[in-house]
Amino acid sequence: MSIRRQIIDYSRGDNLRHFWHLYKLQKKIGSGLIHDILTFFLSRSAHRHGGYIGPDAVIDETLSLPHGLHGIFISRYAVIGKDCWMYQNVTIGEVNRKAPVIGDNVLIGAGAVIIGDITIGNNVKIGAGAVVTTDIPDNCTVVSQPGRIIEP
Image (tube, rainbow, N blue to C red; front, side):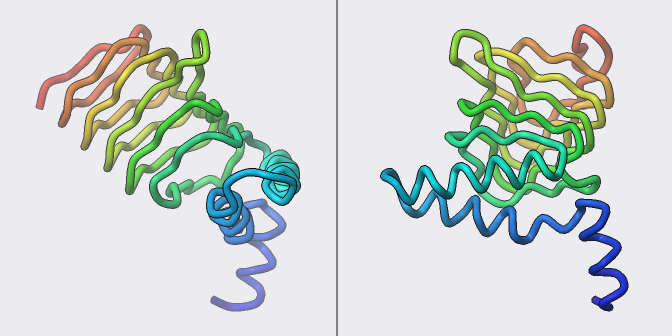
């Protein structure tokens, strides 16, 4: 990657390499003072990029965030599987300290809201602007407000 491209990505907030490095390091440390310090820097970094990822959120692998962390909110109780794509302004919220469990290979469109103690299956596509408050089985597409499942 050219230096020009790196500068542009950094200035737009799209370069999340350092953010994910901090995230992985924080998860390895466990608990204690160093964990708390890393959590502080992780939260500040997320805020700088315009989003929030809860310190206790479980993310199996690095999320694909094509638009960076812009407007993304992930609850501290959320669990997110591998190879997930998340576009801008997505909310993964909690109700009574319970947040969604999201499976592998899930695509979440811009402005989608996923809230509550629900499970999103593997290979699910959630359309832009969809509001999901119920469990979604594997291999489905969800659209509209309230969420409506379109079978494959």
